[in-house]
Length: 94
Picture 1: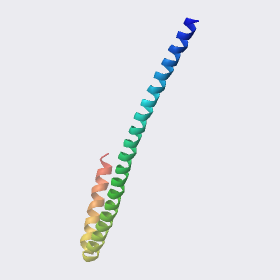
Picture 2 (picture 1 turned 180 degrees about the vertical axis):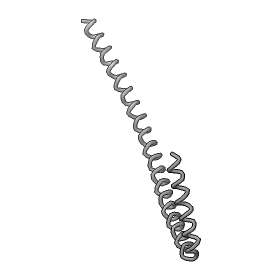
Picture 3 (picture 1 turned 30 degrees about the vertical axis):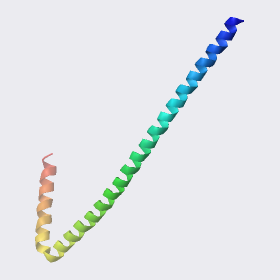
Picture 4 (picture 1 turned 45 degrees about the vertical axis):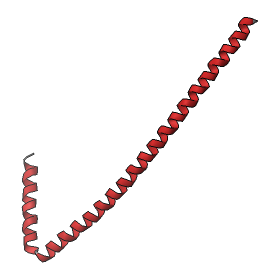
C-alpha cells in the first residue's frame, strides 16, 4: 500500500506541476496576443493615414495635370506624343 500511496502522491505532484506550467504558458500567450493586437492596430492606423495621404496627393496631381493641359494644350499633345514614342520604342526593344 505504501507504493500505491507514493504513486498517487507523485501523480498528483506531476499533475500540479503540469497545471502550473500550462497556466504560465497561457499567461505568456495572452500577453503576446495583446502585444500583437496593439502592434496590428497601430499598423492599421498608419496604413489608413498613408492611404488617405496617397488619395489626396493623387487628386492634387490629377488637378495639376488637368490645369497644365488646359493652359498648354499644344505642349500637352507634344508631351503625350513623345511619351507614346518612348513607350513604343521600349516595347519593341524587348
